[in-house]
Structure formats: structure tokens, C-alpha cells
Amino acid sequence: MSGSSRIPGVSGTYHNVYLDARGRLREKYADSASLEARFMLMAAAGKTQEELLRDAALYVTAEVLRRYEDMLARRKSGEPLAYVTGAWNFCGLPLIISPDVLIPRVDTEPLAEAAIARARNIPGCRALDLCTGSGCVALAIASKAPGSQVTMADIDAAALRVAKRNARGLKLLVNAVKADVLSPPPAALGLYDIITCIPPYIPTGEIASLDAEVRDHEPLKALDGGPDGMDFYRALARHWPPALKPDGVMMLEIGAGMLKRVRGLFTDFTTAEVITDSGGVERVLIMTPRR
Image (cartoon, rainbow, N blue to C red; front, side):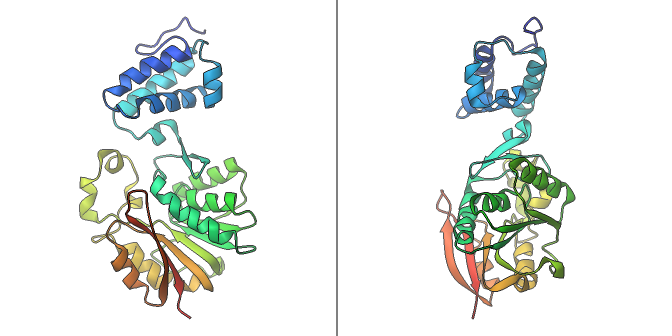
């Protein structure tokens, strides 16, 4: 090694370091300790899972040990794994993740999958993803519906930087624009076949009761939907229908129990489909303009 240096807590071969870290994580993360220890070691060493298995008997360098020990300390303090490693997976795509953006959830994948399915049936489909954050939904569409013209939009410059880094990393050609959902769309955006959005929808008064990993680490501006959680849905209904083609679709992620209230805002639309997530929660509302 490089193995002569030792960092308190972790040391030795990749296999031994992994086993030691797994044991240290089990006290707080019993169900996910094995997975988390492996992901953090992969991130610290810059290795794929296959490379980690291949190199299991090799000694870990002092530099990797230092990075790994820092990651372990951050994770044990409660920082989300995605922020600790700086990476996450969404719809099979490896994404860069930072505290500037929400961590993509599995419960959001049905929204992306519905948009992908529709985009595949529209030659040259124009898709706009509002409140794009990491760009996860937009990039899933661009990756899995080739030929689509995808635009990522967010009001936050730091979030757009993350989204653009992800696009470059995935070698996907997409547009990225600064746009505020709470205001009318810039005329230059044009019209779209699909508009997707995961707006902030947690009522302000409920933020304090969120799980600590979310409340203390994820960006408040991407969570807080106003006093009743509906501010962004009202703005979407008021300002954004003109950005949709006459035969286009609006696809929105919604919070638990919000379906009736959100649906009632879009008086000029008909409900095409409601999709539930893995927990049975009505999570995706798909609407089309009335004709």
C-alpha cells in the first residue's frame, strides 16, 4: 500500500475495510449497512462494483482511506448517502447529486416512465421538465426516448449547474433554461408535447416534521410548497397551459392526498390517467387540454 499508513477506524484490504465499515454502520443503518458501505467505498476509490470485487484482496491507499473515513463520519451524522457519495441512480441512469438538488426518489420513476412512453410515440417530441433539479426526469426522457427535444428548466442556478453536469456526463444533448414556475413562461420557450414537473408540495407547517435526513439536508426551496403545499400547482394551472400544444399532456407529481385539490385547479383539462407509486399513493396526475 500505500498500506503502511493507517486511519483510525478503517484499514487493510478493500474486503477488510468494507467489512469493518459495514459493522460500524449497522448500529444506525441495520437494514442498509452492507449496501451503503459498498457504495461509499466505490465512491471513495472511484471504482465500479465489478472493480471493487476484483480488487478485494488489494490494500486500500491512505488517500482512499481518508476519503472513506470522511464519508463514514458524514453518513453516521445523518447526512443522506446520495450527498455523501455525490451520486445516485434514477431509471438506470447514474447521476451526480449535490445538496443543491433533491435526491431522486423511486416514487418519481413512474412519472419519468409515463413521459418516456408517450415521447416514444411522438416523432421529434418536445418535452419540458419544470423544477428540473438534478435533471433526472428530463434526462431519463432524453436517454430512453431518442430523438426527443428535451428542455430542463429551473429557477435555481445551482440546480441547473448540476443538471447540466449530468447531461454532459451522460452525453445527452438537452437544453437548459432558467425559468420560474411561479411566473408566466418566457415566450422563447415555445410549445411542448409534454410538460413534466415535480414542484415543491410540502406545506410549510409540515417541514419541521419531516424525517431529519430530508429536513436538515435537502434544499428547502425544493420542498416548501407554501402554507397548504399548493402554491406551485396554482401557478402551473394559471401560467403554463399556454406552453402546451393543443394535443399535449401535463404530467405532475403530486403529494399524498392532493389529487382532488390539484385536479380542481386545471379546469380546462381532462384527467387522462392517475398513477400510484409503489406504496399505493396517487403520485402522478396526467392531464390533457379540453377540446
